[in-house]
Length: 508
Image 1 (cartoon, rainbow, N blue to C red):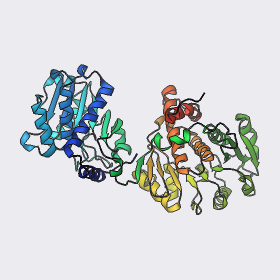
Image 2: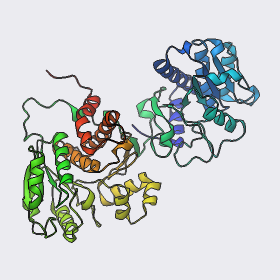
Image 3: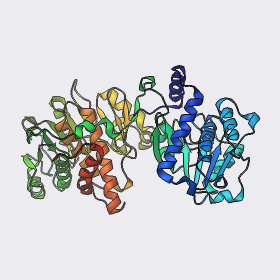
Image 4: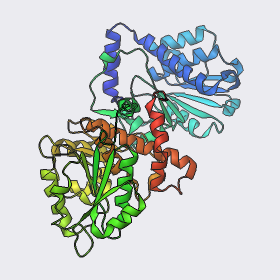
């Protein structure tokens, strides 16, 4: 799903109007979509006490369209419509909606009575995507009222929580966090990127009449199941373990066998037909004892228990579909040389994580390379501070992906997937409960597992793994709680996450 800036959204609306749908109809459609959502979530509306707060611009016009439709569905004494402007201050479609609101008999208030504080729903239609600078005057006061004046109410923002900049970045003034935000046509940057996405609540995106061919190009998208759903289709009846790829996990060292085991197990659980874990010889017995489904490959090792330079990795990768490398390898001096050497010669897709994220990494021509750094690892790769990376995660992921011809999975809150063509996908799934050791190893294995099955669709395979990893974590956390989740819980709930995204009938 494309994510648009405010300027891009204005361009889309302009194209839609030029195609024959007037602005006033778009505003009416927006009001319809908000009311439809309210009916879906808060029926019967006749049982609600609703405050609708309208500014004087187009967002306020949307709010007045909502209010007019609510007036026919709610008890008049339980609907409070406040417009922060006199009629003579309104213009264009906002004025037209004000006049229609008055014509239908709905009272329009200039200030709220005391009993409005018992509202159960507040519709925030004060400010939309046209905001520049901080809210001031009566609009700022109305934002403060939303934040503190309705203790029992859920807040539903129309298009954008008021006071929040639509193109993301820190708000310049006061803003009104929402429980739900109903936006139109496409999400805006602030809806999907930190820090503002944390104040949007549940995001609902509804169409108001723009045809798909009228959308503008955007290099930012919100990752959603429809993008990779075909990868979750039922398998062919004549499929076998050789059909679904052989993943090789080069991981682990003395004392770090868990990382290798979790990575290999995740590749299996994600659907790879075969998984081999190659690790220092002294680690093999522990890995094999933990998961009998994993095949193992003992490698020559250093006195410290890391993989040695003479491990003959070129032989080990032969016949494999995808290579995952990094979890638990350790920081032995030989590791960087091993990684760079294999990266330069390996023709299969490679997923590089943790200790395999070494300087001077770049994808050889026409080769698929995926890296999965957390912000600290990304900072080392780009030789910047973690703060600089976090300040603009999208730009960081995009720049590294395009320059080094890699798929970059920059992990963290709203993981950013940078693609070599400059596009960036934002992943909406995940939970703070996943901030525990081993979840990154599981993600690396899941990416390898999907790439093993779909080596010719690397971007979709990576997107599916990232989305499902976060969703499985969410499902697990609902059972374990945020503090008790451990990395392997993600794999326990991965089947439920796949089922939720597959949208295919069960095959008997």
